[in-house]
Amino acid sequence: MSLATEIRTPLAVLGADVQVPLASGEKVGYAALDYAASSPALQRVWDDVAAYAPYYGSVHRGAGYLSQLSTDLFEQSRRTVGEFLDLREGDQVVFTRATTDSLNLLASAVPAGTRVFAFETEHHASLLPWAHAGLDVTYLRAPRSRAEAVAALDAALTEAPEGPKLLCVTGASNVTGELWPVAELTATAHRHGARVVLDAAQLAPHHRVSVRELDVDWIAFSGHKIYAPFGAGVLAGRADWLDAAEPYLAGGGATRTVAREADGSVAVQWHTGPARHEAGSPNVIGAYAIASACRALTEAGFDGLEAREQQLIARLTAGLAEIPQVKVLNLFGEGSARVGVLSFVVRDWNSSHFSAALSAEYGIGVRDGLFCAHPLVRTLLGDEDEAPSECGAPEPSLPGERSLNAIRVSFGAGTPDEHVDRFLTAVRELVTEGAAWNYRNEGGRCVATVQVERGRRAEG
Image (cartoon, rainbow, N blue to C red; front, side, top):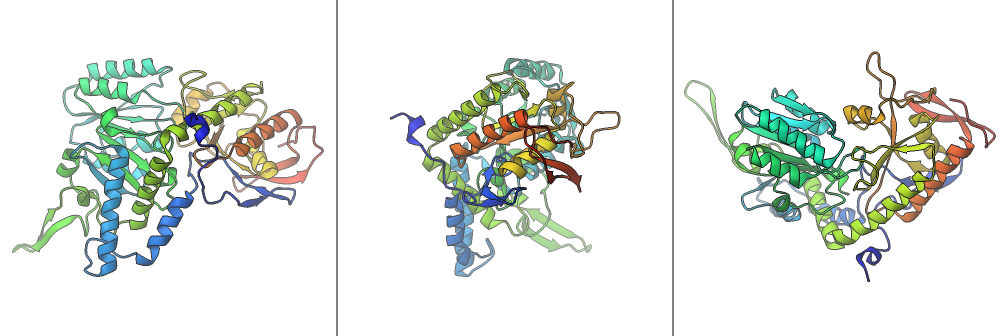
């Protein structure tokens, strides 16, 4: 039996049986197709957290049984994440709040004079922290092929001045879902003496990720993208820059000793290792939830999970290709390898209006906007015209710019086939028959107001 047929059903997630109201007053099962924003919790993760919750206690500073138990669980979670990422000997795992927090932490820790390289296609979490930390940043134009991405980086690094250098690159785009040539980019960066941090927020939930094989220096991802919704994230990788940097936060847990000096000042010795950047009481449940999700995905088997997801991707892309009014957004061209993330626009439809109709008339949750990747989405949309609508794009355009917007559908290990099929049916019906309701903008949200005769396009 092939791996593609071994996993016939999705993994169990919370919310699979949730009923949501339609504009008509009926209720239907919710089709959660916004995994790229936040994935649902795996039932396994929820059960593990629920079993631990009565034993919850403070970590590292308690002599009582629950504190000792929680400390062991917290540190074992760190080891589990390290195994999941296939870290090298000497690499460390720092628990953070999310990918954004992880990359801002690293931005605060890079040596003075470091030049950072990032493609304009990055999510804001990996595009913005570097300049915000006062570092020199070279923004590379959006490449139109994987080979072009590698060549552009090679050229930029060849021209770069001497000194420490860092490339920040995504593993999978949060807009198009396309896979980036991480290993090739890393090899190029290392050849020029640059280090690499991988934004794996959209990659880790879908693919096995080996830091050792990819040879990246650091990796960052979020729990809430990987079926562990408790507000924690990870920065993992080389220890030297992190140990040499000032602590990300000053406070308890990051300190080895604190003493008053004769002159009245306070002398501090900081920890090295993960504790240096984990000041304060850590999110033990968040860390444990991430570790639980890592175990669950590993035990389910990424080969089978990826094979099933690729079947859903093939069904989705083939279905959308049959609808002439739909334009799928791609950076590297049609047929690009991707995870379960896809963005598109629909001719003669405002994207916010279309997304609202999917929700109000079909119980389907997707996302519309610029997806915290404004430069990339604007590049991909180019001269596309958004249809005027009272339910216009919620993200304001810059002065002198048209309002641009797209629709994103995303799914993962917990998505049943029926949700993809229902989505395709809904897109076809909306395109051919129009919305069954009129919509208006209420506080930035597109809201159904009056039912109309199906078969003619509802106005704004």
